[in-house]
Image (cartoon, rainbow, N blue to C red):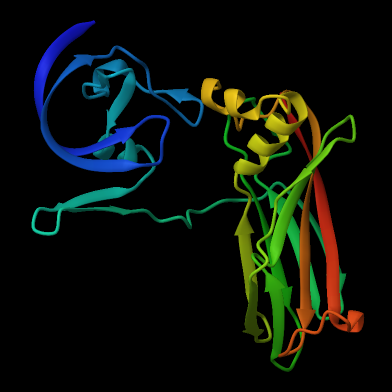
Length: 250
């Protein structure tokens, strides 16, 4: 491993942290010969800029990594702001779908594949559509849609919701689209297999969101109340329904 003195006046992105810091100092860092694997595909070594190891933390070039995800990076020296712009709405096609209807609402869940190679990104999303003629106001805590996962042992893990009440008015044909975040898989793996020491698991596992091989059921839940004023005692205004699809990790 080569060691070199480098003057750093840029954004350093920690490999295992979402925090990016702008610093200006002289540091002695080692050039680390590591491999970058993006969405289960190892990048060519000759195309990767130098990666630094400083105090046992790996730093990767922000612009290069962001570009791998189709993001654009810019820097404003006056404000010292680093801008990362990313289009989250890329084109995707479903190969597996399921839907349910509840009154004037239709809930669907879709997956880009029925089977995924272990480590590949799981592309799964849901849509809640309002079909009613008149505008309607609904209230819900956190996201109106939430996910849960069930494995072959019938172990179940779900997303948590905030208690903050939100209101929104829907018109006929409105869609609420939500993409499944892999943090659900992290919760599943941590709580099922490492519940005795979740903190150590999170610190020592390079990819804690990777599901073990097997068959799973992914469920999406829609939960909300109808009306401009939330009344917990009025259960007639409460709506809760779900749709599900099976996937397999090979």
